[in-house]
Image (cartoon, rainbow, N blue to C red; front, side, top):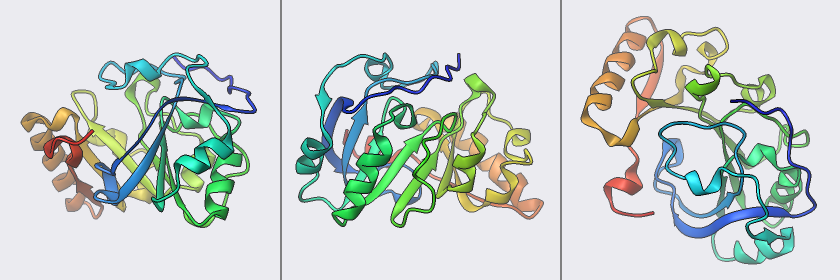
Length: 215
């Protein structure tokens, strides 16, 4: 279920804002402020944030209000929902960067917002989803910091070896076992080993915050 429309708004609809450390991917362990935006354009069966899926004005925040909330933590993670579905995203990112923050956007990769190209200290983490056949917008791939694949029953070696993903199989790609389940750690290991045998490199990383009992 892929919707092409991008939410237009002068404010941002926020599901929640909270402090924790980044528990996933290459920036695991980084103390962060998480800004979770409300609304996602796709539906994944194992989504653990179903309350943030519907597009609704749950809690409208101005950029200035979010900037005030970001005071005290250098690294800001903008997640969702789907951040790229919000037209106010580029303005929020530019404001945070101007104030000296680093910004990480966690996206499913299906949408793009112009104005994010080549921004310093912006880290785009893309987690392609099987519900849309792992479709990723070309501009997301062009600006990528990290590809993060959830290892579940559907992910296969052939998905990672797609032509658009191959250039990123150089430690910019992480495999994250769904739910930290042992069976998916084993599957991740097998995929990583096969990739290594043909000259590619990926990392297998857990959801660290769940292991340690953080939100």
